[in-house]
Length: 245
Length: 166
Image (cartoon, rainbow over all chains, first blue to last red; front, side, top):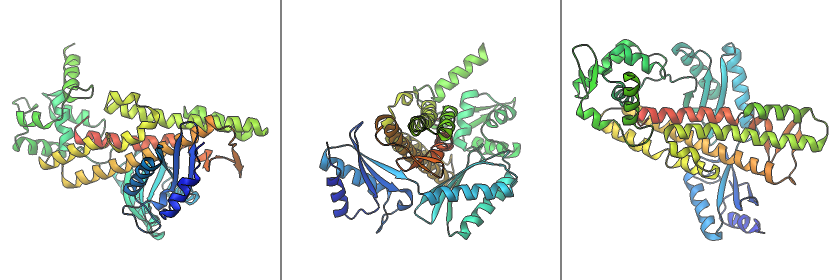
């Protein structure tokens, strides 16, 4: 059986002290390197590592010892306690509207947050975001990105608007609004009208006399297509089929 | 699947016989892994049907490579044509990178614990403050693997949608 001591010695020699454990998994014959998440930062420095360096170490060991290697990123006890603490504080403040909250650290100081809220709207979103940033700021932690899981709080990109129009064209403003509301909870009519006008002026759309929008050749060339089931061409064909029958 | 894991977890916690506790506890880890795996597989199949059959071990690499690359390429092309703003490009790119990294890390860790649970019976569960632990992983943490996976999958879908690819 393979001895992990050789790998441990290699890691010690290379001073990769952010790898806290090495294990051989007999069921699939893989070497596992265990690294705490808080030791992974964007650019590696003494005592810390980066995703890029871990990938390099993994490949180096694989080549040297001719065995597959996996890096297992682990979360500390502090991580889960902080997560649970913030979850409780926010729920106390916002009447149990926070359904879930997950943190992902990049080093000790930077964090990405995923939040699921009941009944998401712009006011509650801003209020929770402000409160969350204050709590983390007190702990000297910088919020990098917040993701709202319930539904998409941002507005659709022009690329996704063009794709929807390609599939369902000719389509008027109300029809398009209905389609987009499935994924974007609050798109103002005026905002969408402005975007459509913008696309029309730039030659991506044509507005017909009955108020329906259709793509121009420029837009057709800009919307990704292909032969996959999820291709806009296939979705267009399926939408036409539904419309016909 | 998560529901099954929870039933097994409850049974393991309330069981007094150490051997039975061990059996139910490790089975709960297995189910929690599969709950996260199935959510990921569903998301992958939604963006490319071929990816639905990706073997367990290949999913983390797929997430960091093929799931990310076409979206970032397309987002950059869209930015050149002014179909997305630089702000949208940066936000979607960051979200996609974070979510794929987190999901890949979660699946590697959960898969490791699942293999220990299934194939290394000599490594028994530990009980600390009424919490079941296997290979330093708490069953209470494994309980939210599926919900975490679901949150990361939503961000990955958003990035694919924002790029116009799906």
